[in-house]
Image 1 (cartoon, one colour):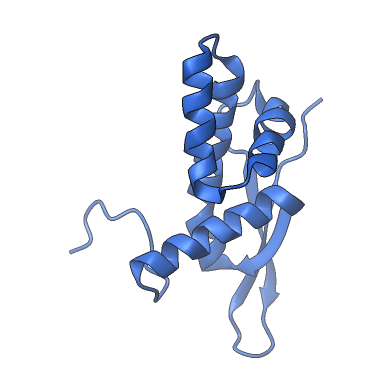
Image 2: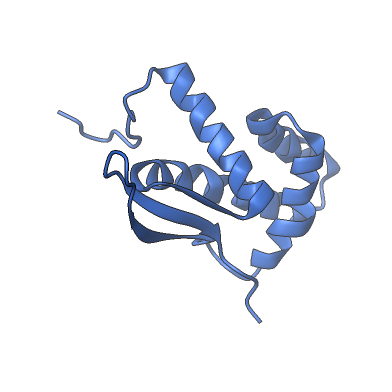
Length: 128
């Protein structure tokens, strides 16, 4: 039974899966759009959304200790201060009036080699 099991295993062991999801999330934040399989896009989407929500909270809090804690929490996924700065100061402010749903998955067809369904995972543009 798979009751309350949130994540797909993606045919990888736990540390490989964690590294894969962190690398996909890094790519999404660096380029703001990636092409990957639909299963991987669906698996990484909650991670990306959680990170953006933490970054929004880091921007809105008045407590410096809380801001540092949230930045460190984001940094544990990437271990890259410049990327954390980009997420907190460039990406998160775009969505300050939005409650979730920061990404979209667009299905684009099938890969030629193995017929895997491909999708584009992208961050939504800023609303005017």
